[in-house]
Image 1 (tube, rainbow, N blue to C red):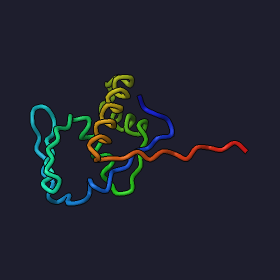
Image 2 (cartoon, rainbow, N blue to C red):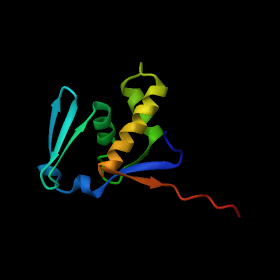
Image 3 (cartoon, one colour):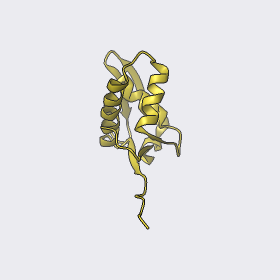
Image 4 (cartoon, one colour):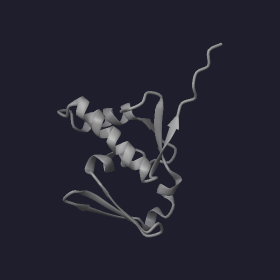
Length: 110
């Protein structure tokens, strides 16, 4: 589930050694190999799209921004499915330490 007031930003680790990171498209999506971390990840095409949206240093996007970006690229996609898949992609990217959560500060009542 996408949480209102939560935005996402690329982790610093995503940019460290970026030149050495290897990408390869395969039938199942994209394989990302980071030799400095010794990790190989398989990313679904939608997850790769979400990651690409966040790879501009300092860019913060909410789940809803990402849903709109996907619907712009795929206007025939069902918005409910898109929201569910974006939530799954964001969760996977956070767990892989490729992005991190940037929560908005809570509003205080005077």
